[in-house]
Structure formats: structure tokens, C-alpha cells
Length: 179
Image 1 (cartoon, helix red, strand yellow):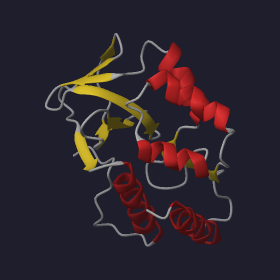
Image 2 (cartoon, one colour):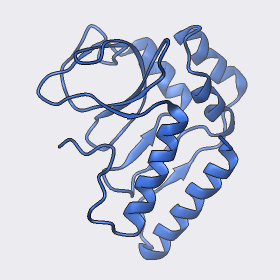
Image 3 (cartoon, helix red, strand yellow):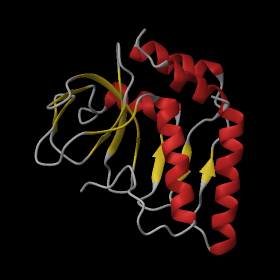
């Protein structure tokens, strides 16, 4: 994936949104962070750290797309490291129809998470609000949904959601729609 082309396209979509809504909520594409910050996160997660997420963080320090649909946020590496290290309510694994280790990397305005499976599959998942206990997310009534085969697929899908929102596509099913 050409990440710079993707970032240019997201910036273009943000500008389209700003033209239609001048008092737009602060929407940001954060600049890359120093290598040491990213290296700290990678070391914390270990060798299973997704290579596509690493490539993204090398060119972009996170996203705040708070003015699109249910809002989309890709965490900044420093914040992700803090949550991974210190928060007892930050999941590191999932139990349910899909099980195993995960790395949450983003969320929406309702606090629902986007995560990557770690290991053989780096599938991007949407985790609706459910119980998190002892760093494990438990699937319940609201089901885990695979939204892409990998992080780059997630970025493609995110861009499509943003475009659909800009064109007011009422029939579009967003990746963080629960039902």
C-alpha cells in the first residue's frame, strides 16, 4: 500500500468535509512520532507487533476523524503504549467466536474498539462494547465483526467510510455499525 497516497486522500476528504461544515470538529492527521516512541510500543507488544501498523506509524502518528459518522480514531503510539502497559481495562486477548491475542489500535465515539489479531492472522476486527476483564475482551450479545483482512485493508475500508459520509450515502453500511 502507498501510505502517502492514502494520507493524501484522507486529507482531501477532510477538506471536502470542511467546505461543507466550516465549524468542523477538530479533525487531525498527526505527524509521525520519533522512532524511539514507536520502538517503545513495539518492544512492549513484542515480536508479534503488526508490520503494517508499524509502517503506518512511521508515516502517521495517528488519526482523529471525529467529524465522520460515529467518529474514528487511530491511537497515537504513545497513548497506545500507555494503555497497553497500564490500563487493566485494555484488552490484549479476545474470547468468543474469534479468540486469541489482539492489539487494539483505535476506537469510535462510543468507545467501541478496532483491533488487530496478533499471530498468523492480522485480521482487523471491530469490537462492540462488551465486558473486558483481566485484559480479556469477552464477546457477548454484541458480536465481534471482522472488517478487513489486515491493517491496510482496514485503512482502505476507513477511507471508503469517510467517502460515503461525505457523499451522504444513506445506504452505506459503516464498519462500526453494530446491527
